[in-house]
Image: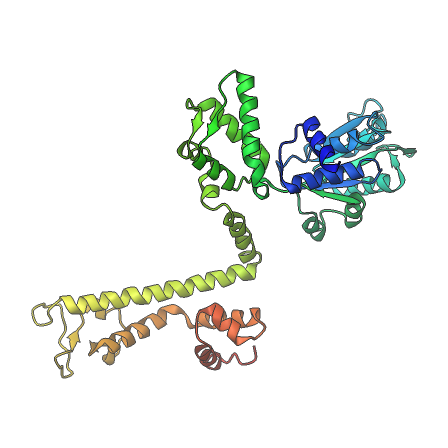
Length: 421
């Protein structure tokens, strides 16, 4: 019987889908409709939240009463109180007459507050009062008035985060959330995607009197596996674009991919995770400093390799006894000895033991000494100190983040007198 009722609701309100998540949401709406409990509908933008307040209203005892849907995000903050609760004549500039608010005109019916998370805090306090007591006061008035209104609210915001940031009242959340209904995103209802595409294609063909488009098997697979960040609204837009623009009525995967954003198509699951990861990395100034220091370390290592390569190439490619720009060393030379060009020797510190490089290990030593002056000892010390502070002195974790061994980290700690961290 429950399945039969759900199917009737789908036909009545034009809801397309066979997923269990969608059926569950409709079933909850039917169960709560005969009561006067407040309902909070959550879900991403474009999933079709606006259908459920109408279901609740039409299957309630208030179905013959008024029904109003208000988008709280589209009303300016300065006038939202007047829109919801009304105002008295002369209460503010432009108030040339007394005006009834939605809570007054919707008396005995249902009020759908879409994007309720956008309400300013002052309006949230007024809303909490009318939900708890049924009482409200018009703007500019001192008279308490009564209203019998069933409130259904919806939002695509993360209310828990909004409460934590002080943008939404916790007590109002619990008052609105008497019965929660969550609408799953389209990517979690893959079995509904092809059905919705066919419905939108048929509607568009009928409206503009053209043959309906169909999908090849590989195009259907791409359509189903796409992430659809805009959910049903985005799917409808893409379907209508293809229907109007393409001459071919059989849509292949090549045609379909031209209408899908490349970033989302390539990374259907990881895109949101990547954004979340970036937000976590740069969530504080300290994390930004870590990132700068680690990038500096990488740049220094790259510079070491570049200078080392330049020195090796110069020593290997130019004969030492034929070019007049080469110095002759006063120290005895063996078969492996190489004299550096003047232009590279001028880059080196003025020390005799760097004038000659006798083997490959000497090259490494000379390069390390030169780059040590460029790497800034203080930056390395600061980087180690920050890593230790971040991990509360746990050296194993700090060494892992710095990309060095624990043994090296212990030596650096002793060298920079950081034992107390």
